[in-house]
Each structure stands twice: as C-alpha cells, then as structure tokens.
Image (tube, rainbow, N blue to C red; front, side, top):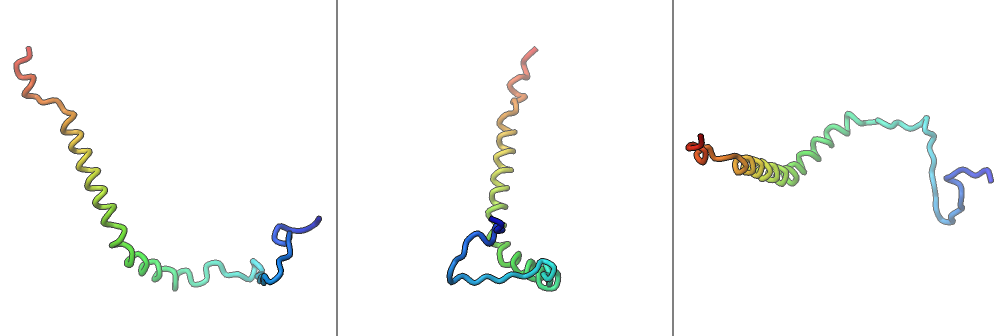
Length: 82
C-alpha cells in the first residue's frame, strides 16, 4: 500500500494546502496579540459567568453553615443530667 494516513483517498473538488512544520511559527504574536485579546475576552464575559458562581457559592456556604448548626446538640437539653 505505502500510503500515508492523509493520502488514503482522492476527493475531487477538495483543495488542500500543506506547510512544513519547520516553517510554521506556533507562537507568532502570542504576547502582542494574545494577551490583550485574553483580557478583552475576560472583561466581556466576566459579568455573564461570575454572578452564577458567586450565587452558587453563597448558597453552598449557607447550606453548609445551616447543616452544621442543625447537627449540633443543644447544650440546654443536657443541663440537668448527672
């Protein structure tokens, strides 16, 4: 057979381009373009994502405190025990 994985079939009308991995720049512009884009995307979505997480945490914290309070014994019930 001798065919590589990307060359198993011929498809008419499909145009493919290949670039040598030695010619690619994987991190080109990662700092100059990537970091400002990261901050912009964070600012755009933080008010959409953060409130449900904050509300969820507050509900979880309240439930944990309430469970702890209800699972404790009342010391006043045991004042007359000897």
